[in-house]
Length: 430
Image 1 (cartoon, rainbow, N blue to C red):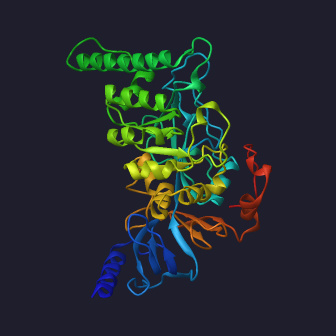
Image 2: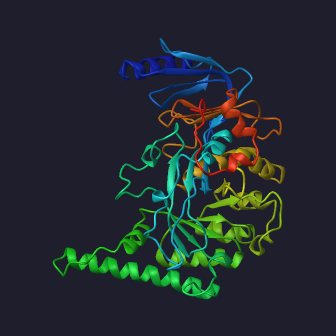
Image 3: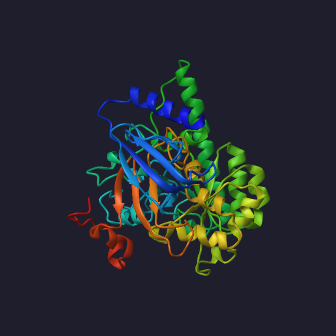
């Protein structure tokens, strides 16, 4: 009965679909939908850039005229979501002010940078491109879907209005990175005081706007405070660079005082205050340090951090902070978390659906289910095996990376040349 119903549903779907829509079926792979059980000998149907059906090969019928892909022995996972990347050379505020919410990374990202090929080669299909952490508020981040090579950043945006719309989060930071010479703060206490002052300015600006709307004097536009109001109104999320346990607790206090919902980015010490983070209902996007050491703030890193946070009930995702970590090795960071106690299913979720939730894009990406964008990765074997390669990366039903293509393969296996952020045209790498 279930197989028969699936066939009926597919017929209904395609009867209503545009006559010329290209339909593809990926059959006989092992599929990890994420959020639902693994399916052996599975099939997935995509049409018009969307997933139409996912199930066993016996359940899912092949629509008339569909292109069949036999992926026997392969594994399919959702396109991975990197909630913290610096691909494309983004920039934010300058040295004139430690708080620059009006600055937009969207206006500086080089979408033709070859660095995005590293993400494709690693199976990453969605990225949150952020300015740096040398400011208390360095500016607006940008959510990108890494489609085919673009001519302009508008080709990759999730938002419809790049001028007035909310096209990403807000990057905030505390800790040592933003402690500098004046006008920047010289202490952690001063850092929090400046951030608190900005939020209060935005609240006052909101009150002035309300009075103007009620017939009072008009209020001149303030791009800085408009962006902060988007945070206070729940339209723009905060991605908060924070490492040490005391800095993380400062983020919790600020978020409670001003009622906003941040993502803790990096969170090297987050495992030390896992229960407090869980009680606050905040997610953590871990930059998984596979070689402990380095900056002072990361000295408290624990290789079991992901497992501890997950056990406490924290929604854990992973990020590359690329170029700090290599986008091509995104699977590896979650694999190390599995080796240190994180359940494999939750680790895969941390690379996909949890990252989508951190960007509030889970209605479109992060799992393989009907109605979502056809973003997925074909692997040569199990997701966390050291012998597994990313063979293909698909975005909205189109191949954007194919390891069998020599021009693509070099971005998976090449050395420092792949880190060159200056655009170079690659014939064949299309």
